[in-house]
Image (cartoon, rainbow, N blue to C red; front, side, top):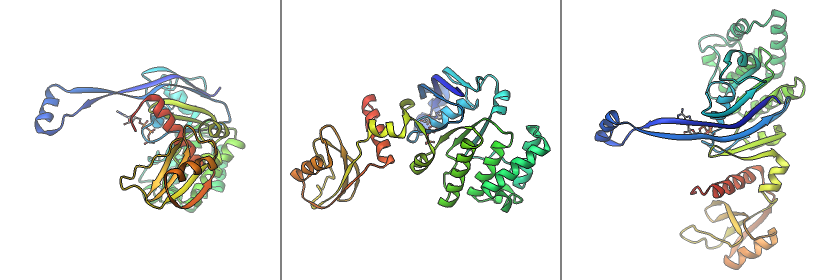
Length: 334
Ligand SMILES: Nc1ncnc2c1ncn2[C@@H]1O[C@H](COP(=O)(O)OP(=O)(O)OP(=O)(O)O)[C@@H](O)[C@H]1O
């Protein structure tokens, strides 16, 4: 097992500032403290050579978990092991085993050409000249870096910069790679190039990759397995097919209502409203409807419709269902 998290928990303690001038003064004298449990008893493991998608809605605790796995944050409780090392206890040894890319930040030197940053990292990680040349050639072939690697990092576009960051993260040949939203803000062509690069690193180089993303196409194309968290807790751990079976029946019904209620509140027994855009509604199976035909019958019993389409659930809808179900299990208000 390459990565193991057992009951991993992170609680942040923050000082809450009271509103207004008087509140501000009171906070100075008697600060009010709040505890936020960002990650709450999460357990999962990742095998060698596996690409795991680590998913969850905004604020679910993904980055906090990745930061514990990379040794940036110390867990409040629980255990974490990455290639046999507790990352926060042995940061230096851990750094040799892992590479990390945080899509929103860079580990390159802002004022240097990207290639000079890579040369500095080569020296830091003691990569020999032959390995350096060979790896740089491989990264260039897959990511077309030589087109822009003599440009200062501050002048690179986002897609160019992240591609250089990927090369920087893999320069010392780490067995494990953490990628926190690496393709955020990229155009479709560059996204595809980065995905192919990741596939290659897993299939041909045998690296273990943990990837967080909000892009479901990416998950569909790349991930063999996914771990879903919500409100810091584990919702699901398994394959895409298992996720669909467990959370998303394979259909949804799109209808346009002839006379949508002015309040916008539409309810059909046995169905769940997945999306709404003006008079257009997308229903998925709730507690009761057994098929799209059954769903349609239930809808037209209550509402007149002008348009209708039946569709298979896409991954995004399945995820939404998983989060909704988990939220109601936790009894968290919508
Ligand atoms: N340093 C911190 N101090 C206090 N609270 C924090 C801190 N870092 C994160 N949090 C809180 O912990 C929760 C989880 O945050 P985290 O960044 O891990 O979520 P995420 O799943 O990565 O979200 P996103 O998809 O938006 O990046 C959030 O409620 C966040 O506000």
